[in-house]
Length: 434
Ligand code: DLL
Picture (cartoon, rainbow, N blue to C red):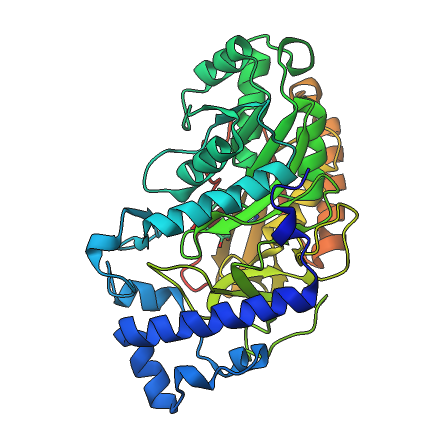
């Protein structure tokens, strides 16, 4: 099903005309209301009226997360505070959070966008959907919640954590859709298994919409098999709006971007040069319908590819690939670029180990060491040294083939790593010089 055929199946020419007029409006709005953008455009001698075609987007300046930090908390808002009806924030790892704001119209558009993504992932008014993202400053739960209400599904705002209760609610309410991070979905599975609940027999779950962090296709297969669901990926970011920027349809072949609200570019993160479709680079988004906090050419640091090839579902909006990594979570080990997603795909497809892992990086003098700590599955866990060595060797060899780098593998007892109810933290970088 398609939530909004009028827009989601628009032909490209019409879409681009719409994007251009919305971009022009946005640039005027920002120039008139946000000193940060006015100063930037003035210093370049660029007037809002200079946006004559979509190609002029490339002449506009980029916006960085640090710009939001420097203007903390409300300095980038483009409307007076009385028109802001909601704020959210993303918790940075250090210092102050990044604050984002919404007008009533922004909230309306946001729920339209999440309604599209939810519909693409299989959700209808018939569904009972458990939202197991944390309700609060994080955008995940509220964003999906209002989209679900728009669709008319029955929402169970369970929030994150309290995992046994989540499973109980799923059983008692006949939950058919689950929304959370993929790592929490995995953790919930373990708890369900411990409680003796068999998803296939005891639950009615059909749809899993997982996002907010990276996960591989191998992980999708694992989750689909064990939860007995169709699992789709969806992407978003607080600064852009939250969830709802893009989502997979049931073809599971890339996430459809809501291009009538965002213009997407893929750039070379080092040079800023715009790359052709199909090439991997950093995603850069321009929001063209937001009132409270529109951003021009926002650098996401997320690496992916895009395609405008038609999709079998009928949607015409461009699709982005799964996020392959972030420019800031790429590890450089002995000069080799390593993405956690590469390691995850090896782990998930290796027998005997569970998809629970942690990457520990240390340095010995000038030599960096990568240790891949991974839990074993219960059935394979043994104290037979030869069996363990065999699994370690298989993993180390596969990692070397994929990464081009020797990594140390450490097998752990089932259940020994920390579990996450939100975004997982899998990298422990102990190097002084990173
Ligand atoms: O995570 C918004 C969201 C909530 C998206 C719920 C989907 C579902 P932030 O907390 O601001 O917003 O984090 C944004 O999370 O730049 C990516 O690095 C990462 N991310 C989000 N979705 C995906 C995904 C929300 N599907 C940051 N795959 C982004 C990989 C993702 N990474």
